[in-house]
Every structure is written in C-alpha cells, then in structure tokens.
Image (cartoon, rainbow, N blue to C red):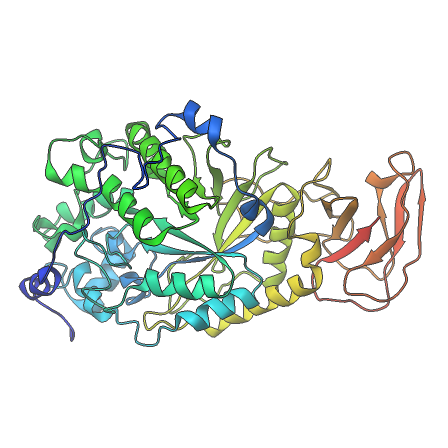
Length: 501
C-alpha cells in the first residue's frame, strides 16, 4: 500500500527527542499540593465522595471514537479482528491492504492525518446539539494515544496528525462552556492484539510496544496482576496503566474519566482504588467535582454506573449513564454504515433514561480526516432543536415517585438499544424540578391523553401547558387521572412535554 512505513522508520519518528521529564509517583495517592483526603479503599472513598451536581444536571453528553481505526473505516475492533483468520475483517484486510505480515495495524497510523480536524467546529456542533459534556476517547484498545504522552510513544503528537488532539479539544470544549471528560481503554490493550500471536503477523514482533502484552487467557480477556500491580517489579508494570492514568489526570484535568469493562475485574480492583483516590484528591485541588464511569465491580456511591448500549428498567437511587452510539453497530466511523438510529429513537431513549435518574452519552464517529459525517451532524442538530424547546423537562431535573406509565416499558439491559421501541400516546415519562412535574408523552395524538398517575387523590393540579406551545390547553382532573386535550399543532416533531403545576 502507499503510505506504508517500515517499522524502523516508525521507531525513528517515535523515539526522537523522547525525554521522560514527567515522572509521577505512583506509590502514593498524594497530590502535588499534598492533598490525600481519599485513601485507596472503598470505605474511604465512600465517606468523602459525592457525585457532582454538574453531572446530575447535565443529562446529555457526547462520546467521540476517533483514531487509526477510522482509516480503514470498516470495523470498530479492526485492530483486533484483522488478525483473526475467522473474521470477515481479516479477509477484507488481506484483500485491501495485503498480508498482515507486511501491513499491520501500526501501518494505518501514518495514514491517520486528521488534516481537516477543527476542534472549535466540533465543540460548536456539540453545544448546538444540546450536550453539556464531551468525552473524547484519549486512547482506545489499540494503544494509540490522542495526546502527548511521555510514556506511550505511539501518540498523535509524534506520528499521524502531529497534534495533541486531546489538548486542542479540551480548549475548544471548555471555551463553549461544556464539561470536559476523557475515556481511556488502556486496560484493554494488553490482550487486544493476542489473535496476532496465533498467526504469522507483525504482532509477533514483541518490540512493537503498540501491541501491548499480547496475553491470552482461557476465560477470555482479563488483566493479569503482574501487568496492573502498582508495585510490580518490572519496568512495564510500573509505568503502564496507573502511570498513564496519573499522566492524563495531571496533564488534562478531566472532569470525567470513562472506562470499559476490564477495570472491574478482581485483579484490577486494588490498582483502580488507588487511581480513584488520586483522581478524587486532585479534584479537591482543582475545586471541581469529577466522575468515574465503570460497568461493574464498584459501588454506585463511589463512581457512576454505566450501561453500554442499554437502559435501566427502573429508577436507580444514584445517577447512572447509558453510553451508546448514533450508529446501531459501530463506534468508529464506518464508511458503509447507513443504519443510524433515528432522531425519534434517540429522543425517546433520552427521555426514558432521564426519567430513571440517568444520563445519555451519545457517540459520534468522525472520519479519519477529522470531519464528522453530515448524517451524524443532522441527527445532533435535530436533537438540539428538540432540547431548545423541551430542555426544561430534561436538564437539572430529578426523578418523580415513578418513572412513567403506559403499556410499553421499552428495552432495558446491556446491549439492547439498537431496536427502537414503538411507543403510543399512552406511554409517558416523568421528571420533576422543584414543584413542577413534567410528563413527556412519547407519541402525538390528535385527541386526549389521560395520565392515570395524576388522579385527584394524588395531588391537585393547578395548571397544565405544553412546552413550545402558546395554545391554552383544556384539561380535567378526576378519579381516572389528569386528562389533557392536545393542541392543534405539534410544537416539535418528537416527544411532547406537558408542564404540570
């Protein structure tokens, strides 16, 4: 392929002027200012930590998957599956780029140039979409960092874009008044390329540090204690995961750090508590509330529980989050993906999630050149338009005594949100703000809606209006509930909010 670089040339690029000037002390959770309120155990963290109001109020954020995998634009796990001879990705790669002995994943990195990347334009789009926080992936499973790392020479400053993507995005996001977070999948790197050890490939060259530990365990991908233990004797373990996390914290001060599932496994937990203590101690120095997202392994009172591509079936006592993507299948850009979730689908999910004390973190997948596909931009802008009208029922709200009513409860659980739930005007979700109750009706009707949960025995209603509508509504409250006549015209094309005093 054109743009193929030899490994030796890559080494010369990666290690030129590489100076380890930043040396975090991972033996301690004490900050540079001497703060060590949080200690690395759940009891200490629980006694001091509170999920910040900014997160509970925000409700809607943007996730960004972008990197070398955006170059082939064919599969989210391209870096792993291109070495799996039983995968369609392997066949595609060999046919398109050649044998994996000659063209490995590392050879995509010089092709990831981000030549049209405009962080200010991205941040403006996300604000227009109504997002309150933005979470770029700082490093995905493939081991390529989109930031200036002292410890990972495979990064966007030394090769590829030759830019500190995270630094530029951070500045643009904060300039728009949004909260800035990061996602790190460094914990998955140690096993992500293990398929390449089973066949002739460039992964067999263990001097290529991009490909991690290459471990393969019989019970599936885990992380060995040797790799993650903060006091490990070998150089790699000392400077690997925990060192990378300290570096991200110290360099970029993210208000949220998202992690995939490996960090929840038992061998990881000792090290993860140390990370949390160090992060939360630094947040005291910054005078900011911060959030950690994990999928299992830790209490909901010391971090924010995340459900990938799914929702909760009930109100959860602590704030939680759904992370999902506009695309029904992929996270990174896929050049042939046309099966995107509809705006109606995403807004219905947002309303349902918020009614249960959750947030929606919605992913976009930019092209390798740094442009966000127009189809994804259109979805974001339509969500933003809906939130301009109805955001009062979303932002800064809290759950009511019940999340909703109606015959369709919708999907719930891990990896369940690709199919859109079909709602009727009987499907209603509730949120509250002070003395105001918002009842969001998930489908339009030209007639009446009866909210059975608001019978006259519950609490007297004084007024009813619809957000975005100037028309005075006819309504009556009796033992059957609160019955409201919908207006003549829709204020928006999607879910419709009744504001009830």
